[in-house]
Length: 233
Image 1: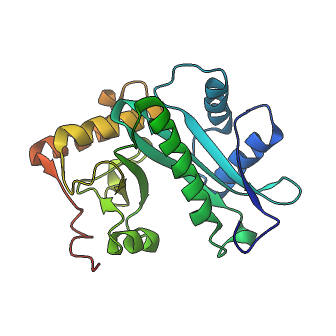
Image 2: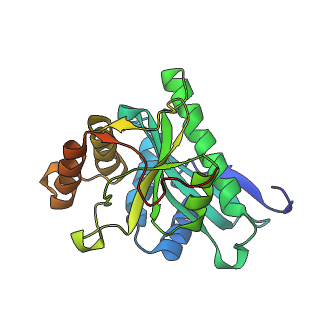
């Protein structure tokens, strides 16, 4: 890696390796509000065994000279909607400010792109992720014309309604550069996130999911979140 020759990026593809648990525990300890580590290890095992999952789970880690993770990132190719979804990204507290997260995320996005090309013969339509609405990183991407925050109240499955507006869902266009998407497309995207990435069995039984669906259907076409409209290029 640039500026840090003792560090290297590896794809974690076997849940039986100690690195798999160590990387996921780094994510859990850094972020807190994540899926159980054992559940995420099962994601890796399903991919290793070639099980049909609706898109592979990808875990990449930056490791030091001893093979210990100092950063980790995870994501999924949502096959049903041909989109990548970045689930988690964490950097050890002692290693922050070295741009490790940015470089590792690029490796993760490339892994998702390669899966889509292998299975679909083309790039994903876009890569999506969820971040806090006040994220300076997201504003930097938007200002550079690299990301489009969706204009609707987004909730991940464990967010209560009182947290409305805390997070935004954004997309980084790849094969599909359209500035607006139909409500139906966004509903199917959010359903894929909840159903495939978060393994929620019946999203339509969730009040917050149905709240998002109702909002999207009432608005018809979904463009850029108003808090980010007019960001300078």
